[in-house]
Image (cartoon, rainbow, N blue to C red; front, side, top):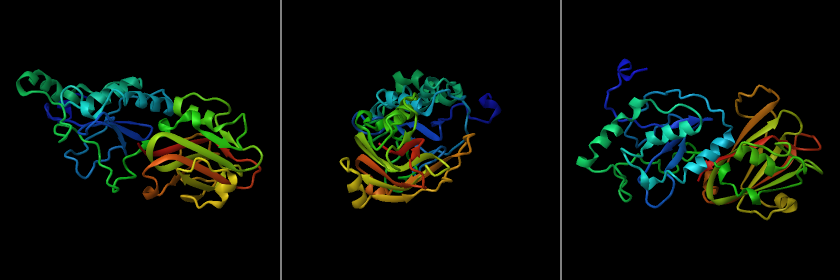
Length: 315
């Protein structure tokens, strides 16, 4: 609707992000160097230090891309949207939201959202540019600081940060591999059976190296509500060379017992599928280059089936 019909001041300044698959993607600046200014957060979340208030949600359409394809779009955009390139009038959060939405096949942001930036561009020759100062962060919408208080809130999928060619899984069935499943998640297209199945017995040992240090905060397992569902899951940090015997004898970073019913509500039509969120200890997962996941037991079947795995965290 037109802004005058919604009581929106014609020259208000708005901060926006784009929500897709339950994660809000935002662009900010104020940091030094050439790191990406794209960060993720819980939708509609407002940091304690924010100088703005949540106003409303505008529907921009529905993307036809799979979650893995969205991850690829974000990964590519991180090269283009650096934190030290933030500019109030030429490259701000609203420009990013507009660009991302269009890349996902949806509408751009309403014209009134970024009106202040367009007006600023007209007067740029008289008032100077709106680029962020790398040292002070002046003029920039800043990304949230990881002070531990919001360590679980500011996060998203980090599957795209896996070093896919070095991913491995011991005792996987050759026709249903971890690498094929992750390619489906990361690229939006699958291979093999699109799921991981154990071979000789119920145990699996997943080795997941990253291309750089990351901060994983939780694992999201998609399983079936039957005896092939993992039951005892152990997670090890930065131990890429474990074998089954060592995984059984070594103290893990975390141990979980997984229910067949799962912990998360799903929108899947197939009611035989469950999702379980396993929260990792943040204090032990702040500098992770490799995760090793040991499925020690399932619920009684000779083989274990893992339909999907997502890793939630921060880069």
